[in-house]
Picture 1 (cartoon, helix red, strand yellow):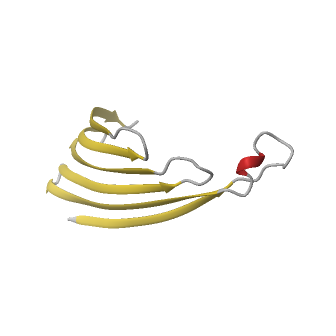
Picture 2 (cartoon, rainbow, N blue to C red; picture 1 turned 180 degrees about the horizontal axis):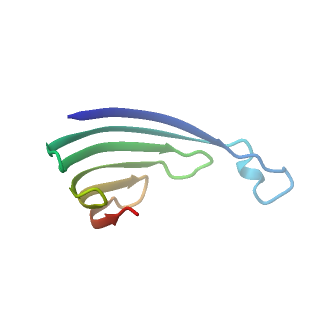
Length: 116
């Protein structure tokens, strides 16, 4: 099993001239925080299952909406020789914003890859 964790923070500062229509947001700062836990388990030499849980938060300034995003997904990987592989993923994602209805999405993906 391989596993890991990640955390991050970023900040966006708005710089605008005082004589434009954007003067109201001059100096405003948005902070973005993110965290994730992930793991991959080998089922055999050619296939594996991976999973991830994540969350992020946008602390918006200047009267904007604060947004929380969180979710999880599971991925199955399979190799068919040296060049051909396939992947199938299933995930659940949610967005929660102030004064807006929550959005919950079920996500799925199937793909095949050939390396030249």
